[in-house]
Length: 145
Ligand SMILES: [Zn+2]
Image 1 (cartoon, rainbow, N blue to C red):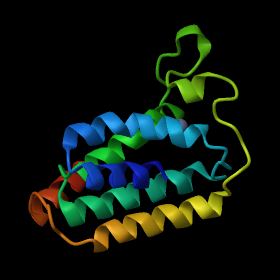
Image 2 (image 1 turned 60 degrees about the horizontal axis):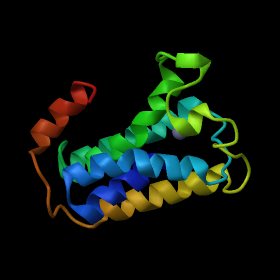
Image 3 (image 1 turned 120 degrees about the vertical axis):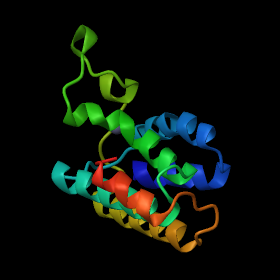
């Protein structure tokens, strides 16, 4: 869901800077919305990588939609990699403070469906604004970007 909302921000603002600034704000807003967590982190990460990969192939690696998707997903990196935890808590506010990540509400399946639908719609919205060749997108994917 973070990938989809970030990509949408990039498409709507058509600005790399706005997408990068809005990404973490959207992440916080999404975390604050009561939602079920997806039970499998592996599935969640796999979905995220697949959606970003599809956006890169369709729009090129530096399109605002791609940067927005990455910026909106970046805060969750600390769930995967152990980053410094000053005071014992995680860094991002919605991960750090108890009750800022409320459970219940939007079920996991609805989030996956909405994210897939949204990114699918963004992909179909055409190659307008596409940057970089398929070749450079492939190179970025191979580099693990
Ligand atoms: Zn989060």
